[in-house]
Length: 313
Ligand code: GLV
Image (cartoon, rainbow, N blue to C red; front, top):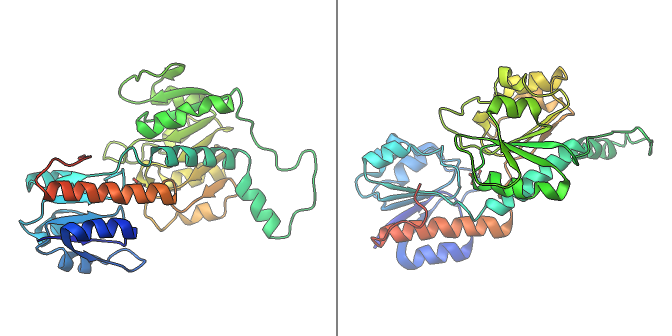
């Protein structure tokens, strides 16, 4: 029987599916599997079902040994996996696209509304007992209607975010390597998009090319009245430069779901009322997380059965 290491507990129905086809070893603690434990428990496995909190590199692949055939990430992003090292060892890598697109797009709009209408700030005031009552000019935000939403990376999630823009009366611009067939959306260079957008939302993958894509120079192209939204991956934004821009009023606000060194967050961001800080929740609905785990299981089981993976990267 094939043997699978699962690095975090998954919904029962998904674990039962895996158990029906293989012997499984599940790291069931609430925190990520410690590196040493991962290295020892991966030995001799045929499949690894892992999370974005696990770094899967040559060291892990060497520890697993030649039996390993598939690394199934329970995430759409796979920057935690050294795909080239997997390829070199003929190990298939899979991710979980599509099933989380809607949840992430809804969530992005949640962030856009929350930061432009100061919901985090307002809630903090109320909970602290500091609310003095209604006033005409109190805690004013920015209206979305008539403004430009700039999407950096018009992939599946970027498209889903763009599709909801008309509900809020926003025009859409996007940047990315290729123009995409999307009526009403304008393709701009990144620089032009940053200069002209009122809300900039990042939806590109984390790669060596996108590392600190939003650095001090690019942040300075944004309007001082504009907002930055990041639901992609933390390293796409230079957190220190962002904190600086927010602090000095060169940017109106930022809503972040992801960070450079999760779960650490740049300390300067904590003191900023115009930063909305969320703990990596974009895909976190019961329906979507279950579908992600189920798709990762389907990928692992398909490869173990000698079939093509459902969603290889
Ligand atoms: C979550 O961040 C994912 O990549 O699925």
